Every structure is written in structure tokens, then in C-alpha cells.
Image (cartoon, rainbow, N blue to C red; front, top):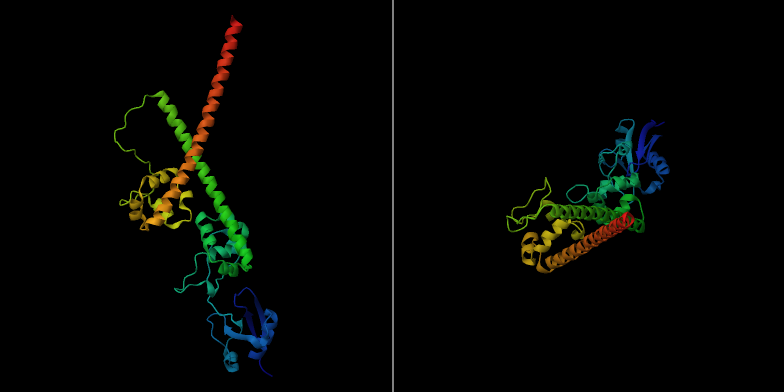
Length: 315
């Protein structure tokens, strides 16, 4: 009677693993295929740790007890274990295993793969992702993203559209905040001008306030963040602050061509989009200022009416 050997089997993703006791390599294929749901005549047995193909019964018997095997079905292939630390407590439940198909020609994991695994574990993790992470998932190849998530391609398309809506909503909130800050800044400046006589400027050209901690490119005069958004973002005009839009709009096509290294047509389209976005924001600011002026006028009229009533009563 042949020796009975304890061993383990798993599928190519390592998400299913079973313990078996079998006397031979053939029995390993039969029982392992039953547990994993594969036809036993269409599987290849490899060592789970390094992918060595096991075809010889003698070699199988030489392996130590509790050796772990991987059963590959048809076009499935062995890949090494690659673990990613998501940096959050909920990701500590289990390691994220990366498929070989997600590795590019240089052997590096695609940047969207780890994010896709987070979504696969918990869709609610969307709320923890940065705008750059969301944009990475939106830009990911839809068929590959669907495969990574275990979705049909249509569902992956719907997911990317949802992520884009989340991005758009965050962008609208950011723009609303910027407009409010711009309005408050303009209102504060107007109040100060009414209190203190204006003094002539001493530098000629107006200076543009740069946020603290942002490096400025000496060649172009733009902040590094502005250049990054212009060159690498979809619809960059919606992601720039109003001050940044003013800087871009003030430059000509030729100057921006030198800054961005683009052709004239693409550069002209960008400038036109930035000017249109700037005009839209300025219209909103003017509308808010108009409402503010109307409110102040109504308040003045009400105060004047009360004073007139008080004078008539005293008479």
C-alpha cells in the first residue's frame, strides 16, 4: 500500500486553499480538482511557492509532508505572492494578492491595481481615496479593471462613471470654496478702501500672491503645482484656482507653448478653456457682489425709513 501523504492545494489566486491526504500525484489532481471545481484532466500541478511543475510521481513522493501545491486550469498561470499594505486598519484583515496579469513589462504593479483591490474588499473605501487615486481608477483600462474587480465590463464602466461623478462633486465643492474666499477677500478689500484712502502702487505691475510652501519654476514663473495640473490633468481649467487662471490667461499662445512644450493648436485650446472658466467664475463673483450691494441698499432704505418715522413721532 502506498504511503498516504498530507498536502495542501490552492487555486491560482490563492483565495481557495484545502488540505488533502493522498497517496499519489494522480489522486492529488482528482481530489484537488473536486474541491476547486476543475476537471481533473485539465489541470497542471505546480509548487505554490516557486511555480515548479510537478509531473513525476517519484518527484511527488520526494517532497516533504504538507507541501502546498497550486492547481492551474487551462490558461491560468502561476505568479508570485505580492502583498500591498493599504495603510488602513481594515486592510489588515488579509493580504492583497496581485495577479500576474497586472504586472507590466518592467515587472511593476500597475498603479491602479492596489486601489482596485481596496474597492474589491470594501467599496466604501472610495470616501478615503484622494482625488489622484480616484483619477487613477477612472483612467484605468476598463477591461483590466473589470477583471481585477471580478466585475463584468459594463459594471466596471458604471463604477468609473460613479468615480468621475465623485471627482466632479469634489471639484465643485473646491471651486465653491475658492469663490467664497475670493468674495470675502474682495469684500474685505472694499471695506478697507472705504476706511483708508488708497495709495498709489509702488511696483508698477501687480504682484500675484503665491501660496506658502509652493515652489515656483524660475523659467516660467508658474508654481510647480500649476504646471503639474496643466500638463497632467483632464480639464485642467476646472482644477486651477482663480489666481492661477488669471496667470495662464494673461500669457499668450507662444509663451504658453514654451512653458508646456505643446503645439500651437493644443495650447490655444487650453488658453481658450482657461479664459472661459475665468469668465464664468468672475460672473459668479459679480453676481454675489450684486446681491450683497442690493442687500446693503435695502438695509439702508429700511434704516432711513425708520429714522423718518422717528422724526415724525418726535414732531
